[in-house]
Length: 247
Image (cartoon, rainbow, N blue to C red):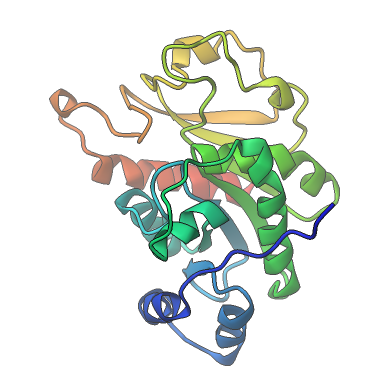
């Protein structure tokens, strides 16, 4: 089997972004940016809890959604590391806009991202893994093994794609049924990838807990008629994530 290549991003792009999101810019982080050029980190360096987040199928780690989640968690004392899969990184170089691979093919890249973080693990730090939609699904495929190995403390999924929209019989839950890794799934009750009513019938293990966004869609946003916005919901979502990591 051929050795997997690491992701390739434009170094200048990450250097400029790091000036904004890395508040101390110390020697340790400069070294990390050299070996983990595909990571975008925010939050206190002294944080005990770190979260590695991957993006969804169609939007990069600099999307408004990912920026908002990383920002509010960093403010809450968690250090967040966002990373991109190779196909998304290639889009930044102006290459062909290829569709995302199946989540099963992205799982090895997620393992590699965890390994890169582990090599620079700050003393006493604890890692959680997850992501938006497809990114969370890829993380869920490796979370069990990594948790049993003592590498990660838990799994975080932001809008898990339980099935394709309009195809509730094509479930993506087989590996979740025996998941022994503590997991938090933040899900909109009206998510077309899995509504609250549908998920109630899945018999998921007790290791998986939920935070529900009332009337929320796949982007965890309620309809305008609800009088609530994503910017309001994100504070409650962040509080649930911080509580989960604190356990």
